[in-house]
Length: 406
Image 1 (cartoon, rainbow, N blue to C red):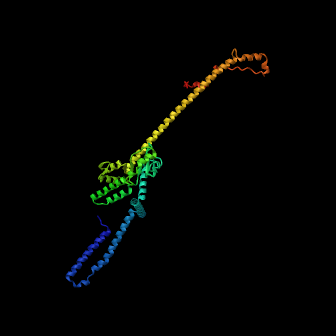
Image 2: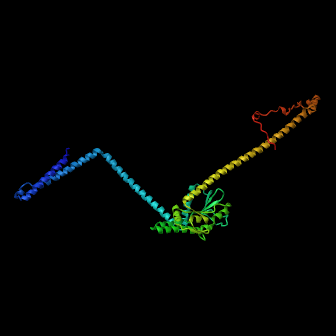
């Protein structure tokens, strides 16, 4: 295969340089005195070599440029360069947007952390907002099937005010406490997760269970002491569920509390599991998943109640319509009886008018006596009895209905 011209020239220069180097070494070994009189091949090589190499480089550069320009025209190169610049601009834009999103997420996290670690009011507001969002997702309607902070004025404790009151289809209600356990247990859970040792971490989770039990059984303001089920029964006049639903913001938090709970003493029993002990004292601990399931059941109950209510309304309307039919039929039958009696009386009057002994005979005698002329030639009437009367055609087409006797 033939080598390119510039490669061949480079090889020739390399061989020439090698030969000159051998001659130079040999002349030094023989100490030739007249070396200064011979041509200086080294200097000559330097003069020719630099130019030759530069020429080779220029030729290679030209070859490469021609190859690039043949395969990729200048317009395409410029377009590709512009596309690359556009991609860099998009990357800068995405980087900027990512930074904004990251900052927004950081702010939300900071605000949430402040809410959960702040005062009771902040934690309570966040808890109520979280639970209310679940209420809205369940399909219940505010002011109809649930009420936020409804004051139970008709109860023996008129200042009672559950965070949420969820109405049931039978007229009773369930009280919801959405903030009593929100702040403390989240802080305790975060602290427990930072503990490296499993034994110490489990002990911290056990303290969460203790905190939940303390909030339920507190002597002054414990959830049990508020007696929400009793207050709701007094307010609405209908007995409802015997428990207060207490919202726990995370399934994992309650799961770890249950797992590391040591048991509770209540109702004469020892080491009762936390969930059962809470229920025995009128409290149902509910995570978001449990709350959504319960509220969905309540919504379906309302839907079924609505269907039953509509069905009952239709049945009531049907009964009312039937009763009106009976009433109208009885009245129509009475009118028919009156018409029949009037017809009989009419026929009797006709016979009295134009019968053998009727007054028409007297009228005819009066005509013969010339009274007709004096009365303005008025003709005596000739009324017919009811035997010639006919019903209208449309009445004939109707089936006869036996009238009910009153």
